[in-house]
View 1 (cartoon, one colour):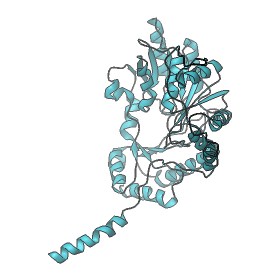
View 2 (view 1 turned 90 degrees about the vertical axis):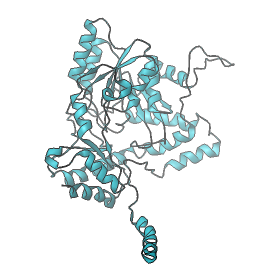
View 3 (view 1 turned 180 degrees about the vertical axis):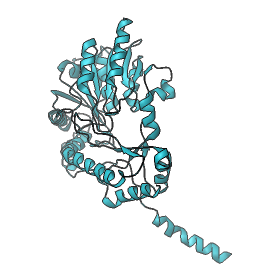
View 4 (view 1 turned 135 degrees about the vertical axis):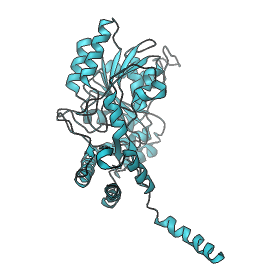
Length: 392
């Protein structure tokens, strides 16, 4: 017995070594250009918030997406918050938000004492359904009180049907905010998302197509909006030699060091989009023949970055559920993730109004995001593919 125990103890280190390294969903991928700008920040002692990298990152980002103005911030959530403040959103107001999204799209509405109203997805792009938006605004207009804003979310690297959504918003005089946190590098009819509405927001969180470790950007062609947001983001300090404040402000600016990372990352954006689409094509070729496995469609109006490769699983046809697949991948130390749980199903938003909901609910039930990091090797991607194919 002692000898058997001794053998099994000796076996532990070898077994641990056999565990494959963790394969993450979408980890950061440095290009090598970032250190130049970070080193400049250190060499010049511009470590504190603001500085030459921040100014340059704002200019370079605005030029990249085709916006007139840009404001570098601590997060995409901060960008939504500041845009809503500028639009005058407050207690008793409603703001329409896509229901299939991350909570950060809706939380700033609640920060201001307003109420989110959620709109279901359509199946062409999985983004906000323009027909439901039109019906909702018409109903609100008949009742004599329109929402103060619409926040449309561009999901997983694909834009919503912006021409239709913008036309509907304009018909009722309701400003549009674009949450393009997941869609940097995508296009709608040849143009970047985020520049069609009153304001656009982007995220540089660690899992995004480019990252500053944490951060975001607010863009707009409205100079007054950006100027107001810039003031609010720096504690709303009035132009005076002493510290004076006429409105409540926030500590929302991006640091000069992180902006340096962003400048290097932005130069790699086109390569990252190309690689994301290559990863998607490999998954599509390898898994597309399996009964019950479908992929997020690419809408006819633009380029999908495939920030994350997303599949849906018809359990009756494939034989197991998307949760079975997720757990099987997790057992192999591979991270995958269900689609966003719709906001109207979240306990914190249980009392909010929703238009539709069935499409988003079905996508949440059946959808799975696969590892899509741009530094992922062919061998790593093969691990994912082989495990999914083995379940059939």
